[in-house]
Image (spheres, helix red, strand yellow):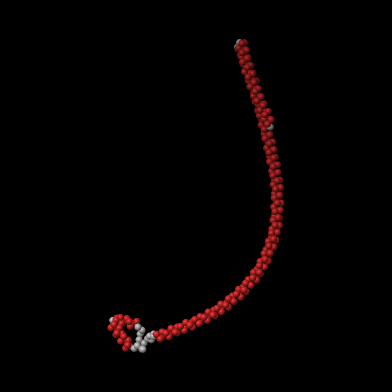
Length: 249
């Protein structure tokens, strides 16, 4: 049954009497506007039936999609397996090829390394022989230099020894000369002293009595003997020193 404007107005008045004017206005604001199609139980059932049909249609479509996806999945799995088998076969072939290439390269590297090793061994042997030869030559040269230096040192040592011997001899000669001069001086001194003593004795003999003259002569004789003994001992000491130095030379 269609609700017209009169029925809505009567309903508003009844609601205003029962609920009050304000509550009636609030309730009518919540109602759909006039002329709107209100949902009924029949329309709701029809709408739910349509929704159910749509869901069933979606289910059928999903089943078809799932079936096609399974088919595509099986096709893709088969294709992937075939591709994987092809990749494995190609990889096995490449692996075998690379293994052969690597073996060939390794053999070539080993051969080259052996050749370089032999070449380096020959070069090292040659260098070692050259080093040994140079070392032997330097050793012989150094031995010759050392022999010549040793000869020169020995020559200089002999010259130094000769110089020292000559110097010692000259010093000994000078010492002997000075000793001889000192001896001559001492003899001259003794002679002069003896002459002076003799003169004093003569003078004293003339002035003193005979007894005093004899005592004086004896005293002078004693002093003379002591002086002579001292001079003789000095000469003996100098001679002994000269002999010792000559023996050292």
